[in-house]
Image (cartoon, rainbow, N blue to C red):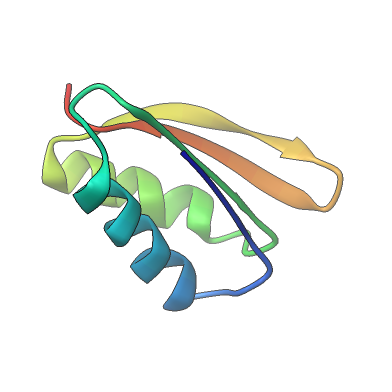
Length: 71
């Protein structure tokens, strides 16, 4: 599932929570956002909720953050 958003907090976080709620165990979720702090915020959220933070990269003017539901 890919979330491509030009929004910032809290919209990106809400979109991510909804994606994880609807995702299957092991499904990869990718967030593309201009919001730089999302890199740290989503890593912290994954650590706190038992999901897997795969990593991030910069693609143009967006941060591409990859996560996976579950461990």
